[in-house]
Image (cartoon, rainbow, N blue to C red):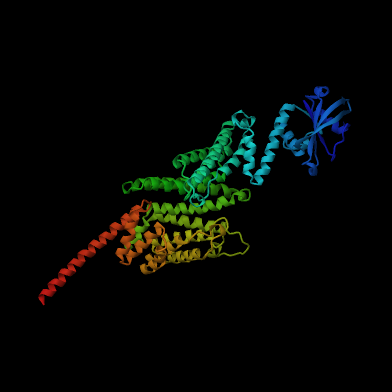
Length: 567
């Protein structure tokens, strides 16, 4: 056993006495009643300083020369042995854990503890504190160097300490992140492979640490959430352009979703878990479905699978929003996820609409406009309400503007151009299905505003072709195919994304520039991409027109020949 002594003094004299009487003595007796008989056998003590300004002062180890206990006081005669490497607040926090209390004031100035148990807790606390400081400084490499001292982990005492393992895993997860453009960063293949291998090592170590945390505390939702995030991060890296390709994305997705479901089961209020689940379902799995099943004969199967994924993501985002809105003040730390969930829920509703309606077919066949599409239109109306809510929630300036078109300009948690774009797209689709000019006007306003809004610094390299593509589509709906061509054709010569090349081919088709349309289609069909089916359908429509045109040309030629013979 050992004494743990607190002093309000700012320093400690060597070869001196410590005395407690009256109320202090009574509190010591009451608190240590189970160990008071050990008093004469205790020959050492640890002293720490209690004042806030002295919390960083190093504690001392004392040799107890003698101790005297009477009915009225406790007197200890000591000699300083040495200054310890532990700070005073390490001792204080260790006492709180040792006695499983939250308030240090309930502990008297002198307590008796089991030395081995206390030193183990103290070492733990010291490491945690050191880790917390390094985490604040984002010094992940230094944390890993500390972790190396405990290799092999399975034989170290920290292997059974989930709190420490979790803190170490935070650092190794940061070291594992691979978010760079590998193509630009590395010219030499060996250097790139070495970099990827290093990231894989840290990623596997993180999975090992976080899996162990779950083994130690299988009912702790936070540990499932952390492990799920590792897979979520890996999924994002594997789907990043010019990113790493050393993982099986379907396996990563399944692991992430299983862990997120378990985390949500244990803690149904965690906002981040709902957000990540929604993103995986709506943004990643839907794209994977398209890439894996890209044949026309599987079209209906793809639609059904995608629809199911989108409905599940809708539920996830809606639950997040519901959880946040129960107590916005308490949840304000998660406001970013709330706003982004509104944005992605609006996107999900757009995708559900697109799952029911082939927009490109409505543009090709003008007669399809205005038909009754109750369920798809309902998704668009939900999307419009949701993006409006998102725009308002993401506005935090002092100006009291009630004009949504002004509110949308702010770059806050979300880029203003993206919010304006989504609002414009929703109303573009409402115009296509309802054939009401008010939606056309709203769409034009927001798409133009999206094109005017400057991207924030971190997105300054982003282009606005996606916005121009929808402005071109709006022109097509107004039967202004030449204007649509004027928007996209100059960019085509410099390089146009596949989706915008489709719009340009459609504009050529509508403008009766069939050869130009066919050239784009033929080039696209040489490639493997998710738009292949759309280009194939457009080609069939175009060939049908060419066939009709040839028949008419032949009839006209025969007519001219007959007329010529008459004269």
